[in-house]
Amino acid sequence: MELKITCIPGDGIGPEIVNEAKKVLNKVAKKYGHTMNYTDILMGGASIDVHGVPLTDEAIETAKAADAVLMGSIGGDTNTSPWYQLPPNLRPEAGLLKIRKALNLFANLRPAYLYPELADACPLKKEISEAGFDMMIMRELTGGLYFGERKTVEENGVKKAIDTLTYDENEIRRIAIRGFDIAMKRRKKVTSVDKANVLDSSRLWRAVVNEVAKDYPEVTLEHMLVDNCAMQLVKDPAQFDVILTENMFGDILSDEASMVTGSIGMLSSASLNDTKFGLYEPSHGSAPDIAGKDIANPIATILSAAMMLRYSFDLDKEADAIEAAVKKVLEDGFRTGDIYSEGCEKVGCAKMGNLIAERI
Ligand code: NAD
Image 1 (tube, protein in one colour):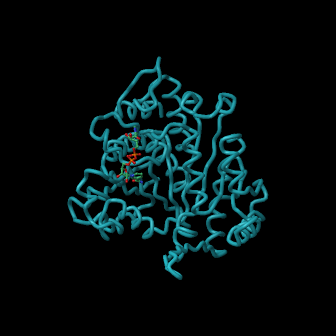
Image 2 (tube, protein in one colour):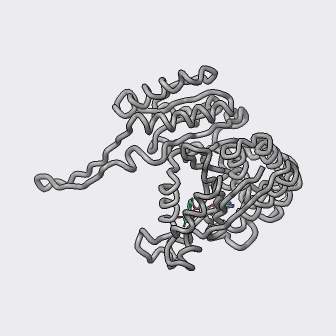
Image 3 (cartoon, rainbow, N blue to C red):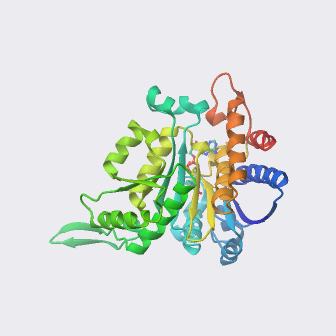
């Protein structure tokens, strides 16, 4: 199979970690008989330095012509970098918002998986971390409170701010379908999270999710209120497979879920539209404090590349091989500095990439 992939190395540690992901993908291609066809584009600070804008229209067209986008990270030190003296629409992060909009990426996927080897980094009680967890948070990304009408007014000398939370049934249906499709590739359980005891948008959410569920008889569906879900994530995270939720709830819950894994350098993510196309990137930022030192952890980006194979190319076996290689490297005792613990061997970014590629 020929895989057309647009790469966005970006800023900070971005180029280093994308390089390691390519190394692993090339090994997969060699072993399973695929051809990787990469085209790099500039985004964020790297694009500002060359073109004066964080993302050009030409770069968007290149991304659209590919089957998937693999990204490192963008942005610099927000206190010292000259990029942050620019107006907000010309700063690095504006490139990310622009590409998400241009590619209609409405579904955000963030796995939270606790590797037994890294269980000490989990801030939960030992009996909970020992049970392990492996969940996927599916968050609606382009609707709800963050995109609704907003204004601040003054009435009788009192300032009042108004944000509106709107969802229509089509927006809910397309994300629900995505969530159930993902569950079919996993343990076939969906927990739909809402606040249906209070919000109309949540009552519509629940009704549409119930309708979609009828097309997936193999998937077990449960509904959970968001406040309960926030508690359950720290009390019994092992109960979750796919958590399906709207924009703001997902924003908060996905950060909570990633914190309980305790390892920011390990967390991958994907943003999908209603085709097979997706943008895959680590959940962390560009870590300008450690850029260029060959000490960044490339695993989140390598696991994002595995998600790309699974969700954009349906290459499940190849994705499994990458995930197994990451597990094996951890079992063999190799760690980058951010996940290092006594008794392990500390390695740099490039060495970690080599070790994973060798185990494919
Ligand atoms: P960050 O995630 O870049 O860094 C937070 C801390 O985690 C730092 O100490 C960093 O060294 C460490 N860290 C992050 N990734 C690591 C890795 N792979 N290996 C080892 N250590 C790692 O967050 P920040 O410092 O708040 O942001 C830095 C820049 O990244 C900012 O410009 C921000 O806007 C940008 N950012 C971009 C994205 C994105 O591109 N999607 C996401 C978040 C932040």
